[in-house]
Amino acid sequence: MDVLSAVEHRPYALPAGRWRMGQRWNDLLFAHWPIAVDAMARLLPDELEVDSFDGWAWAGVVPFWMDRVRTRALGQRCVTVPGTASFCELNLRTYVRSRTTGLRGVYFFSLDAASALAVVGARTLFHLPYFLADMQRETAEDGTIEYRSRRLLTGRNVRFEASYRGLGEVAGPSVYGTLEHFLTERYCLFTPHGRRVLVGHIHHLPWPLERAEAEIRVNELPAAHGITLPDRAPVLHFARELHVYIWSLREDGSQNPLNGFV
Image (cartoon, rainbow, N blue to C red; front, side, top):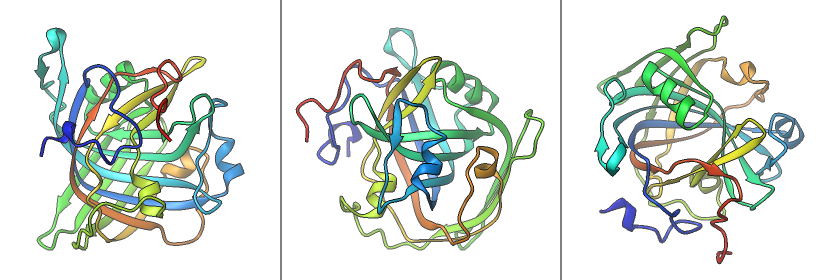
């Protein structure tokens, strides 16, 4: 299936212009915890507000690895940048709404990556809070993924260690109004840059979610960014792969994609 031609599931139309980057995300775990809305709101830029579900904000820790990374160079030709074709990534995120447009998307507190070039490029082109990390990933015969990450060059240990796997039985696209749809079906990200908040639009097919199991042994990301997780098991989902397209950043509100949409 041509990913870019499948748009019926999107909450708004594809953004104008050509996509800037293409990636494939693999062996991805969504681990989510409910957080008090007021506690999460204090950590956000003024231009963004918490997008809540059942009265809670949600913090997500998402380990995966990506490959097939390519970008549009001058002349609109797609190229692969050496050193960024395949690497592990780990992000800490929550879900927000723009006070300007009402657009719903992802807000990243941090993104750790095992590629120095990817970290520099993402900080430069997308102004995202990327950090270089020492990361390892191993897959056992039963599909269990051993994942370890340790942030580098920051003067403090920010570690993550977990074992996880998907349990099969993809049930089809998640249904609007359910928690799994709220946590995963997001088609833009927000990031502060100076006094502005920028938005980056993305596109992909609906997430092929599976039930998951995980043992998270070490998780220092939330505390490093001012988030206290509740003493409860996380909500877990798993996806084996997803092809993703990313557009260049623009100022939030410069082109409201919700015009004409409910």
